[in-house]
Image (tube, rainbow, N blue to C red):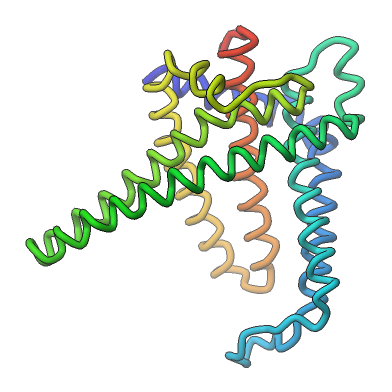
Length: 256
């Protein structure tokens, strides 16, 4: 269990060792996502808290712009962070100046990861749902408890799969070519450690969600701020873990 803790420890050191540098690196991506959010809210009608009617888009072109800007912001956020974590020496000066080829390669890799994950998640959900249906019919209330456990296990397994195939993302961000099968092979020897890393990430996400919910209940006027902060921290931790895994397993960097 020590290695997963070392992976998370290294990831958190990347985030908090130089807070000023961290803010500088993530600021462009965060700004783009904020602009996209503003566009999205600006395109919706019927946003009253007392109105149960779902909001409807006022301007579909604005919705499309919001989606494009949001996706670009997410890419900038991840690419800048991977480059900050993995480039060294003179290359670090180019962290915030990736070429269009880098963006293109990263977008392509993100599509591949998304497709593979979707297929695995779909098959896993169908299989789990089938088992859950049988248990619910056969064991009643006990089956309901088992069902919850099975879906939690499925979520952890899916997170484990995502971590193992996603090394192609930091590779693309730093200008290297890697296939998802090569990523899977590169993580094979550390698959057990990555599994427990996925478990710890799940625990961290639950803690962050509970903290955010508590803060939202305490200060409801800042609900959007706390929700965005929660998403930002979860995203930053995840991309930092990917950077750490790539640096350790592909570049041969020590975790401590």
